[in-house]
Image (tube, rainbow, N blue to C red; front, side):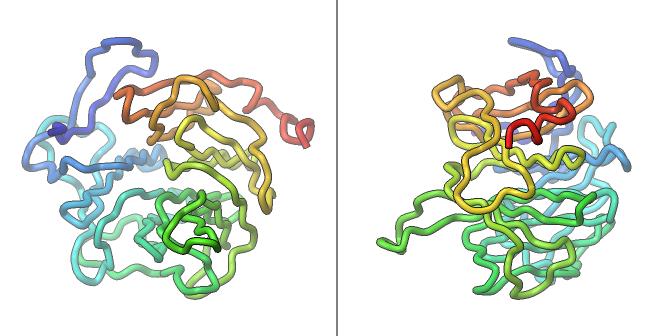
Length: 272
């Protein structure tokens, strides 16, 4: 059984590195099943989902030990049932949480039994089994990864799609664009300056552009498709150091890739 904790390591840690500190213990309210974590650099806060508790926990960026969360989003009004992933927009002060066929949006400072301020859901959205989300605060867009179903067998998934919505979308709205044919349902990350969407596929990290549409190949792939990844899950960007950070469930590891060619200015125009 996994030990519920948020462990902090040095950025350049390697191998059997010791953690610098950890948020852990009963007062933290952390659970064994946590599949997403987000850091808000602007407000120095850590956000994490809590599936068993049906909530979202928010901690100080420097929290350590058995420190309780600053805020907890939880209760019947929230519509949270089994939150798995999340994204934070510190520019517009919002939190985005996929919840089945819904995409829920909360104020960043929400606390307690708070209803979402917007809910993207309905047949026109095409959202189904939504598992991951990211946001582009520069272009005011939301990117949601949801399951794509084969027409020949409604009970068998054939891949996943990235559905791009206006940030202020609410209700049954059609996506602006759909990037289809992906393989995997790991986390997403957005690099707004370049317009690049990073998607953790099962065996590699795929990189698409916010203007892509339809069944198009990734602009870049990292770590695969037959590379080191076995069951890729977590994903984060470190643009300052031109790096992509990803976790793998089977390897029980966090992997860092330095990819200056992806973050270099003009790269996208050259690859079109």
